[in-house]
Image: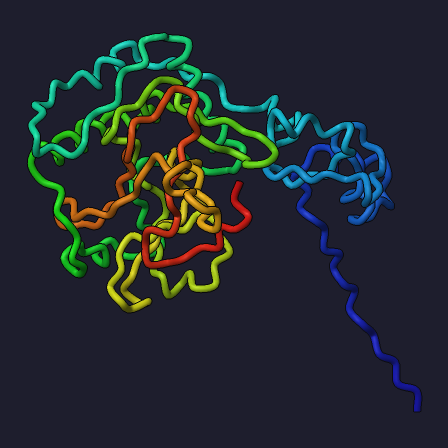
Length: 320
């Protein structure tokens, strides 16, 4: 007896093409497969050999080395660089926000940074941070973002933290009014091949001047034990991974992400390099990480602090 099996016709699954170049390539050459598309330079549209390829860290597209652009100027490709966000015109009154006239006494720890009165320089400082965040697909946010961990977990009384009170609390709150719009005083984010992005002062910064709050996405440490991020900051240390919190500025962040770390393996690195200190405070019931100048900083200096001042230790042997 002959048995005939009729198989239903399979529905062809098509890829949802989002790249305009890929759509054009598929329409012109219907037999083009995914591998061929993946190996095509996004600028000259020619095939790229694996030894000559460069992948943009922002768009993840492949380029020839000569088509990519100069990495010493920018870490992203020329196409992404040309599509950078438009320049924002800063509020003319913003520079006066730093002149709050907070009364200073011998008990004050923090002081506000000096104003950048040069309009062009102030605009350059502001744009440098926006560009660095754009290159790494990070949204600017000067506050802690609780999208993964519950905000209630950040109870500053679960750890013996010094409270931020009095004139210091007032100074911090006043400064946050400025930093929440993306301005951090005389600081500019720069880039080179050795360090990547880093922060340089463009004017002298006095001892105990507020630099910024370490902001970004908040996670339970238990959920980030195996994280490969190089920007993990301890927020709350309870002694238990399930209730301890860390900040990882991968989706949201501010200028704190680009402050450099000292090389702890080098002799006298803290004495010679470090000019910024990070410290956790109980700010109105919540733990907050505040970075401030731990000595006078000269104009042109790169800002460094010790990544290993908290409970979680990093291998800094490869740091510059």
